[in-house]
Amino acid sequence: MLLARALRAAAAAALRPLPPRLPPSPLLRPAALLCDARPFSRSLWLLSGDPAGAPRPGLLRPQRAAPAGVSCGCGGLHTEGDKAFAEFLTDEIKEEKKIQKHKSMPKMSGGWELAVHGTEAKLLRKIAGESITVTFNINNSIPPAFDEEPQEGQKADEQEPELTSTPNFVVEVTKDDPKQTLVLDCHYPEDEIGHGEEEESDIFSIREVSFQPTGESDWKDTNYNLNTDSLDWALYDHLMDFLADRGVDNTFADELIELSTALEHQEYIRFLEDLKSFVKCQ
Image (cartoon, rainbow, N blue to C red; front, side, top):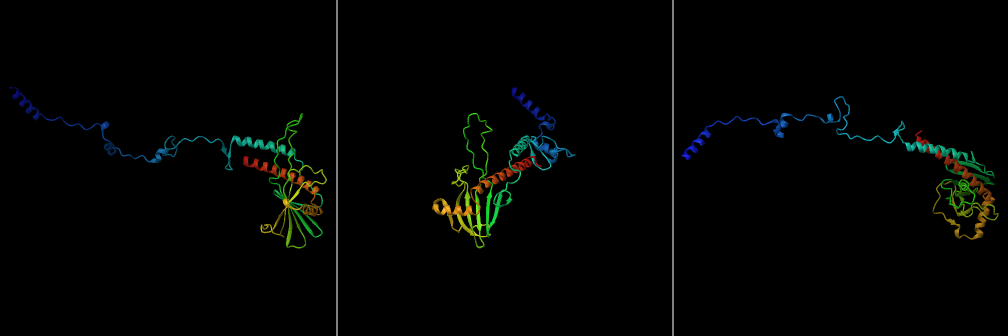
């Protein structure tokens, strides 16, 4: 009896119609179906701005911080540091002009003619058919200052040493024979500077002596150079007398220091003015 009931229930279930199949929900629709139903059509230019061209912040464009300074028509950057730097240079130029001893180049005694080309200067003198030329450059001509212990009752400003320019200089002596020139390379020994009051002490020294072709700016390294470090003192004294007879002596060397110091200070002030103009972009 139970078996017959089970067979009838199975037959009834087989003959029952199936319910209608509902379409899948849009929320559960696969990604492929979504693409077919709504194709992606936004261009990349819409991500960076609206149709009118106005930029949209935050989309493919990082926000950048504003620069520390502003630029002017010269294309340079001007910061608060540049402003402070320019103000410092203005004060520095005023102070340097206050202590400037020579507004124009001091004259050399002995009939020397001066020609200045930037940091290089030439002194020319002619004597009895001979031409004597002294050339020097004021770059790196100030010796380093050594800190000294201040004396009692002396203020800090009073103990600052005065800067003096002691450049190396080259003496060229040319005679009527145009083939060669005698060249003497001279310098100021540090232990002799400031001791010009001693009559027998030379405040400058000859370092090297050589012959070079007259009229040529490039001297030949193949020509012999006489180094005076191991030179016989009698020969060295004759060379110093040779220069003194042509006006290159202690008096000349003292005046050369004054001239070089004035030129170096003038070029230093000009450099500060150029630096200020560069910083301010004038």
